[in-house]
Length: 538
Image 1 (cartoon, rainbow, N blue to C red):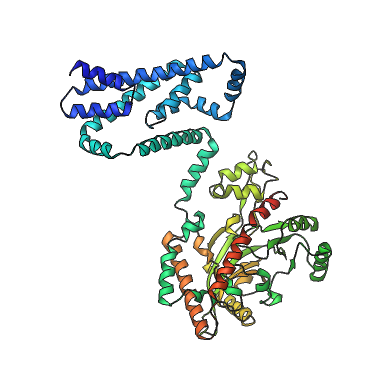
Image 2: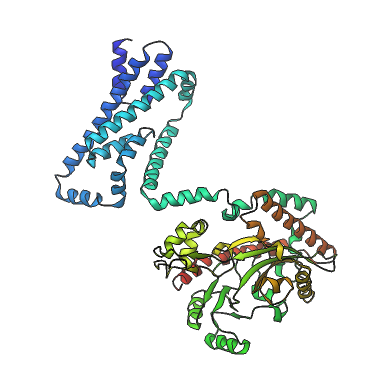
């Protein structure tokens, strides 16, 4: 190969290493030189350029350290976590930057400035250059025609954007490598992918959208979902009041409760009177009158605790007796054409417990648990006052007593609990309740045997049109089985709503429906404030 051409390639690496490698590959494809001659000359040029950047970094440091003020700033800067992580992972950074366009200049200058050991830089840079140059030159020689066409049409702005993005991704990658917690979070996120129960709700419901469009076309309208429960405002799509729904049910079948407002005078006296009149005692469950997905639901143990939480959050609350024992979600459906309804599904709720080993803390046990690690932040928040406690060997302790999946409860299918006796009891309850055809009861009970014969259980609440048949979150179900339950549920909802409409139930006005949803979204914005205030008391 022409010596002048080799010299040109050598010096061209100082201007653009990537373009020189590509050029070398194209020259070889055109039989204008030996592959190994081109490879070695380009590799040498790139490697010496890397050493030059390292040296320039050292010179920059030495020059700046002559100024006392700047010297103090540099010394302080070098003690920050970010710089310590970069130093600790400098070998990774030097090697990886060779494969991320736009990151080499700052990384190599920084290596010299931070006085990364020269021998480490020398050998890592040499290995990275050898690999990178070989790959790019060889691929360029094979794909030379496509590369030429691409470069002719490449936008300069796009090239700069790619460099900036590459540098950002490299820094983020180093940050991830340097943080054990972030690595664990990333791995947990990967493990969640096949587990439908931990999917974000907006992802989970995406496949439902086309089916809802189909149902709306089939039934010639979407507002039939607002007529499925005429007794509840908009059938319970959004913004429904739990207290108003509870008033529709037979009082003797409901866990005792009271509605409280933070603006009420003598609120403490009202709570005391409730306790005396209903013959109940602490602990109670405190929850917003308008809430969803376990928001702000908390077990409380004193009037002072109730008052602190309620008065910091300007919305109405339900204070309800805590029923010890087990909990289920019972999904009830009745077509208006039928005299009796049926139990669509039952979901068993298993409250989270951890078992000690005699040396691990509550926090460690949660983090290492095969299930609880997926909701570790929730469990940390609910147990923040005892995270550092060591649990005795073989001792089991509860870390949650609220029957909500968001709060760490395990949902499994409870079809074995459905009996004729229980179905008859639910139908008797609903015979005293007009205008409700579709929804999920949250029920507390002490014995499976009693529940199956329809005895000794209490209703905690009833959720309307947008409630879920929560057995679909059973981790033992295949994904298609869960979606089959979800689709069946929505098909039944449209059928019942359409039938109610034919029997005279009015469709909810569009403008009023939009207003309710808008108000509900505004109301939800206050949720975060409530959660923060509650966290401070847990």
